[in-house]
Length: 73
Ligand SMILES: [Zn+2]
Image (cartoon, rainbow, N blue to C red; front, side, top):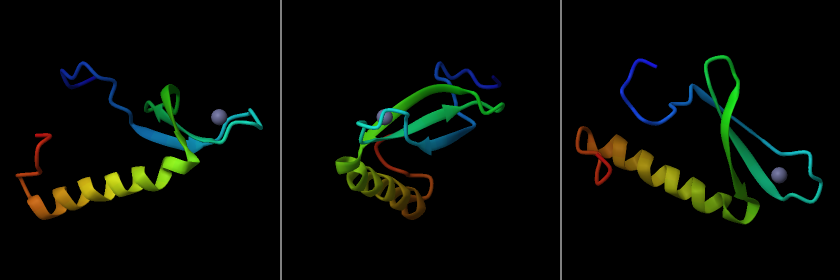
């Protein structure tokens, strides 16, 4: 870790499913530089469009806002 952040900073993510046939969630793993999963979160299929919309909203705020990205910084 080179930063002082108290959070684990994932190097990449892995998006997939789990072994449970009854599970209808998308599983997203947070990976370190060696592709080991440190944490995961799940998103129900019925929520994925909302998540994508939120991602696009933040993306647009960053792209349009320059150094003033908005409320989070
Ligand atoms: Zn699952």
